[in-house]
Image (cartoon, rainbow, N blue to C red; front, side, top):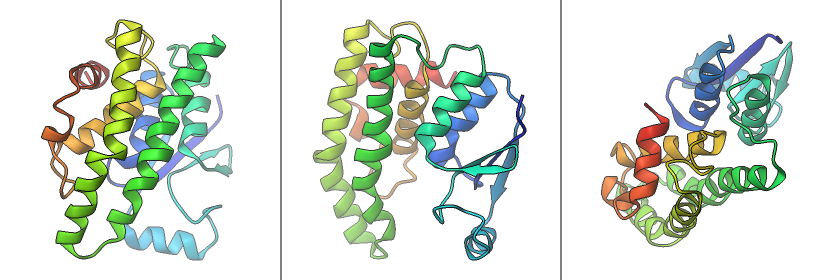
Length: 197
């Protein structure tokens, strides 16, 4: 087994699905949780290939992109977190991209907005538009599978991504977003509770 080191801030965030997949697969890894100043020092030292985290170091090689990290760690273990069937893999990859690309890209500007009222307004608009589209699509895929997960009774890395994102919204820690914004999606909420048990 390769030596793995996951670097991210001391919070759930984008690294949490990777952490969970590693733990579910029973894979030993160094959980390198960094502070803001440590992040700044890493950026200045050129230790981060794209200047961002999370990164996953594999036997000394620093890699990026959470979707790729998820697929890699899923394939390292035997928990079946990434399907072999091409169509099922397509579903998993599509949902991961919906959350990690579409939703995260739409949400990013609100994290940089210093004015609280403007930040809340941005997130209210996001909840009504992009987030609603992503959640509606995901809800339909769970319904199609028969649930509780995107692939029926089999947990996948996509379920971990969905669950971590929904927990972030339900936590109330994101100004302007709350559990009310995901209340209309019972299958997504059930998936979240089942995946994070």
